[in-house]
Length: 321
Length: 256
Ligand SMILES: Cc1cc2nc3c(=O)[nH]c(=O)nc-3n(C[C@H](O)[C@H](O)[C@H](O)COP(=O)(O)OP(=O)(O)OC[C@H]3O[C@@H](n4cnc5c(N)ncnc54)[C@H](O)[C@@H]3O)c2cc1C
Ligand SMILES: Nc1ncnc2c1ncn2[C@@H]1O[C@H](COP(=O)(O)O)[C@@H](O)[C@H]1O
Image (cartoon, rainbow over all chains, first blue to last red; front, side, top):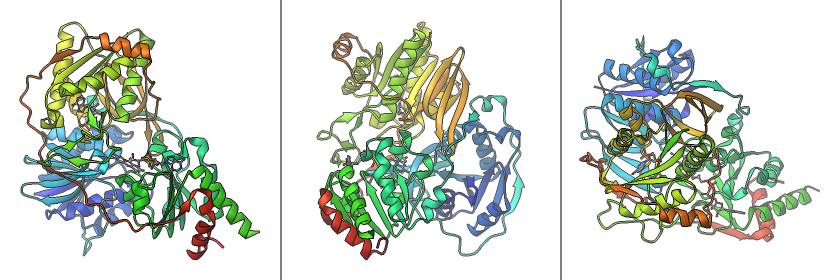
């Protein structure tokens, strides 16, 4: 029996969230096998070896040129059968969620989304986030195969004690036309991905729904500039299209670890907290003293960010002379 | 003429303080009230827009207790023209069960002459967050499905669906009939007018009980994560706090 992990990749190799899923998978005890769809770079293989992966199954070809969830699921199912998987999992990213849900149906399996820990393996019992993360559900995933997604940044991506030399094999996947009906036919150029700067920044000024709209970021951006930092935002802000996704902090965005994080108008939902909790110091600005972001912060100012930020910016400029 | 079915789930309003029921099996929402997720509100708005533009119809369906009529009436008040309540204990239903029950509605209505070309759902339910019902429903009906969608446009016999990918907008073109899981953000849900509310009151909601035996959702119990004790130091209120803030920034070495 093995645990199969659907690994997503980015410019740096294995996506951080997939690294977390691989770490979670190792904790289940069975040998871990990885499925990589699309290009398989040297960097990815060597990182998978660091994560202690026993074998890499590589699915490539015309069916995977543009994203189609059903085609991905066809690959997951083929790999699950080939590896005698008892657990199939991915990170809880949009792609991970979608591919796992398709795969669960095809495998006749139950699925637990946004898992944060495994309570036991036989039976498979997990704790997972429900109600926007404010409640945990302990859930038993019955059946021969359990399908899971791992909540982003719920655990740390940690390499294995000793690297492995994974066997790499090409996965033969039969992808029928019907699995390519719902595929991405077009992408539009997005904003340049500057999330690298976000992850490395010493200071991040965060903006949430409390900014009030796309025009509400002026003072925030100015403070970030004055402190040599960058802007980070919540999912609400990216979903509403106020700012680009690359700026999103949290479970389905970047994890940041700056010296100082200044969340403004951010409630501090668990999914956001997952991305900013490793900031050394947190200074929250919020109208509500009982917002979770305020109670979890080291320092806070209670007030309207549109009044507080200009005052801070002015004081900074004044001292600079 | 596109007939749209939009699926809504009555859920506790997570903005308030959460407590659990005595047996820790459900959320006690008596004091926080109920709502539907923002994704589903967006789905309703899209459904109504499509019905208007194509001269079709928008029907809302919910599987839940008799109280879910409240959420259905809200959908009627903003422009849905019919509503279906599958009266059942939603807590006892897993995502596969819900999908099966919804699929039965689609089949029944088709048998009675109404074919829903487009099924709109939320991307994930605000309480259980299973991320599965739309996809399981699509398989049950053998229809294509796309998720994470912010806007849809009907063009002849297919739907153009646009989502917000991590690297920019992603566009799907899917033949109808299809299932689309909606993420909030593409449209602003309208508010009900008084006339809308009045009209909604008069609609007769089609009520029945699903005929399937639910397999359940594997829930063992719910747990409230312990609240960490707060150590926050309040630097002040309003703009007057600026001096204290900048003093802190200097102490932390991020400002001079
Ligand atoms: C599977 C999943 C994944 C998710 N991933 C992420 C993620 O990666 N990142 C993320 O951020 N979220 C994520 N979320 C969403 C998350 O649950 C919250 O909905 C989101 O973080 C809330 O954003 P917010 O704080 O901007 O908005 P809200 O929760 O609406 O909070 C707004 C805050 O602003 C304050 N405020 C309002 N006006 C002002 C003002 N004028 N001045 C000062 N303060 C003001 C309010 O008091 C409130 O605290 C995810 C959710 C799910 C289900
Ligand atoms: N009990 C229900 N009644 C109607 N629709 C539902 C129900 N449960 C889930 N849905 C729909 O399926 C979507 C995804 O739910 P889930 O897969 O449970 O996260 C929700 O946003 C709803 O649109």
